[in-house]
Image 1 (cartoon, rainbow, N blue to C red):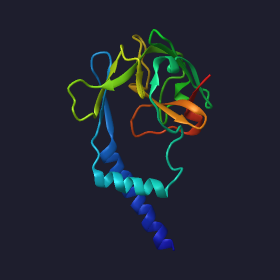
Image 2: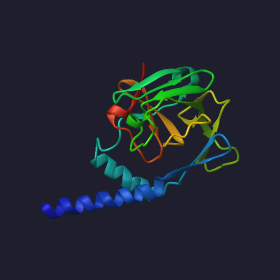
Image 3: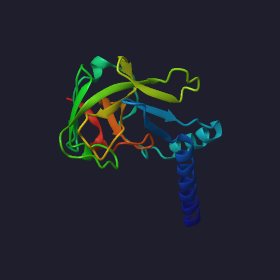
Length: 191
């Protein structure tokens, strides 16, 4: 039994390595907004990962499945059990405090932060569907980019708000890296 457990643990570590290689995303600035590039998925690796996820129910992050929302559904104050809070307004401005307790493995400042937010949309001309860019005119989406205001030097940068839905309703998981997932107390919920 011990050999089987050891073999399964090695298998999980190998799959996590493959998942990181195949599903890793990256972000870079496009002169004010953010660009998000998602790596392609190899069908065999997706099946392999799906099998492991089936065997490992509950190993992922909290928050539910990705959800598409309108701007109106996103506006207002969102709070996490950890104490972090973010307010998104119709003029695409945001204020946030306590993000160091909200971003997984984040090193964000605990001071009040301000800036702008914009939905991610598919990058024009990208037929693969893997590249996205923030767009100030977008009125709906499944994720949004957070751009910190000038004069601020937050330790964290390039945050993405992943919008999700679970049994409790809509929620936001703020991440620096597309491979990260939020714990229950890091999930922001609408107040």
